[in-house]
Amino acid sequence: MSEARLRVTDEVGETWDDPTEEQLQRLYAGLNLRCRFLVLERLDTPDGDDSYLQIFLNDDLTMAVEYRDGGPDSHHRADVPLSAERGGDEIVIPVLVGWAFRREGWRGALPWVRWDVERERPWEEHRD
Image 1 (cartoon, rainbow, N blue to C red):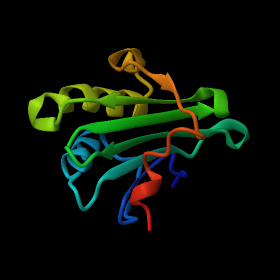
Image 2 (image 1 turned 180 degrees about the vertical axis):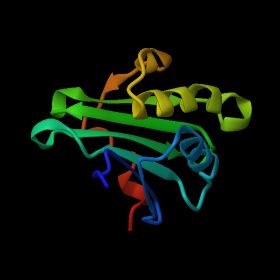
Image 3 (image 1 turned 60 degrees about the vertical axis):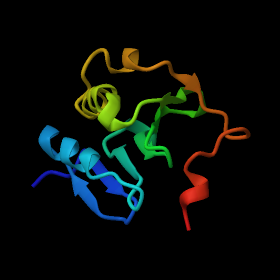
């Protein structure tokens, strides 16, 4: 059996290795105000580079998405100002699946900005 290449972790610490596209969509659909985020992490990056994508559900049910593919210069975030019911899922699911399966074009779905650790810590306020 080969080692996992992708791991998904939710807010309560449950993990899934090498999920299918359908599993990713179900995990995304399960986000709620008690389980606000998913972290997708590549486990097969060279030299231990950070490579992950996070989705976070805000109080108003809009979302923030963050990704990093390498060093600090490759760390970006974007806001999705729509809840899932109002079309946010039509934006987030292609980004989630595109990143996970290394598909072309997923970056073009959102207006990414460089993540600045000094200004932005969207995940920290919800961690114990």
